[in-house]
Length: 394
Image (cartoon, rainbow, N blue to C red; front, side):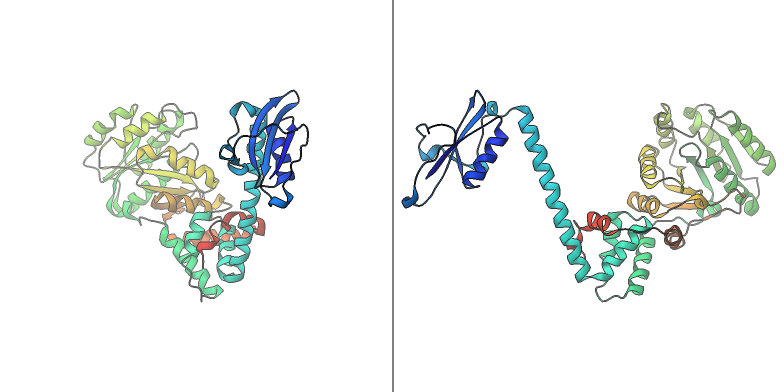
């Protein structure tokens, strides 16, 4: 057995000295504080013909019986021997090593996938450039047959994403309903209501249309709704308190199509939770539609969907399509939330710039936007995104 005693300013350096001198098979025999920091006594087994003892800083004290020793890798170091800075440094070092190892494994996995299934890696690259999230891209590409060529794979990938994107069709225009539009400030709720109202009047007339002006926070909002009602010949009903909404809806039961304009909200809107709760409890006939701007970044879209979830939206409207630089991220959020898309809007013209959402058309638009913008995904990004799931592909 070879025995050594290592003295160092802290436990981390002492353990490193033990590893350097005895290797990872060494066992900790004892630890104690010293004037210079800590002292660690350790040992490792050797063949009998070379058994000896070596001391680094001082003669070796009598050692406990073998039953008292523990392997270095599993050694239980007394808490008092570990100072907070040394423990923190060790944890940071271990985390760094773990990240390095994970990165290397991801790179190896991606390289292996590129060798085994070049079509699959090409599709992952294209979906990344479109803005599709890692989870959705991996799920979609996993369905591509190994024998598919590039053209077949691309068609299948686009069709699969489109199938996952839920749409409602033009049911509001056909069936009517009681629709409250909610969403952040500036996404185009009032403009969307104007487009929907005009579409309804063109097909059914104004007799069965009612407009509810519930946005009392913007001074011009209720005036705009009154002007719209006068232009279309439709009745407009102001709403000051959301608690009054169930009673108002009961009085409007004769109208086939009721559109409710609600206040926009900011991140610090203290009344938002109360409004959303009131909408959620206003009755089964009321449908809440979340209005989202396609020009918003995907991360912000996901936050908006989560923030307005208490209103139990059953569909959404995607506005400002003409201002979007990328669509893949927004479509990924809608797929993940399983929130059906009713209409899309891409301009200010009323009502021409509003149309029913079509999933394949939207996915194709996302692909075209990526091509027009010259979006590109480098190898490092792809390795980080898909190295961890590469084993499940192809």
